[in-house]
Length: 156
Image (cartoon, rainbow, N blue to C red; front, side, top):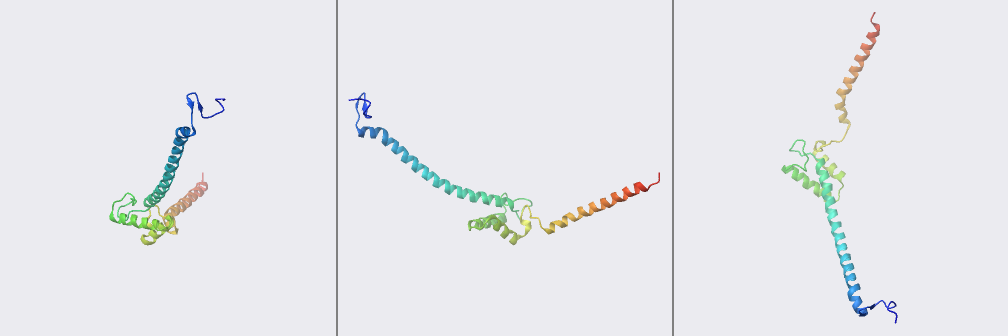
């Protein structure tokens, strides 16, 4: 009998199929099952954690956009004022109910006005703030033109 023809032959004796199964296959099978179970539970936990982390991340970005009505120039994420807590709870309810961030901000602006945002949106009323600058530029332009024309008309 050729010793290399039989995969269960050993120099120490003939191994049976059951001893080879116990030594090689069973531990590999157990390891495979353990890895599959651990990875499956890890994937489901990661999905649940990611959903919660995503919600918290969305809320934190919203909280940083909203001004605390009590504290000047401070977002509600950093404020401990009671009204800030109420606004955080309301925003959490809005987002948890399935509304988008834009809808939650629109609801907040509708209820409290543009002043509740740390970076107010640009609208036509903002052009009024540019009016003094435009007037100053026009006056400087007229003054420059006047001085330039009079410089050429001076007798030498």
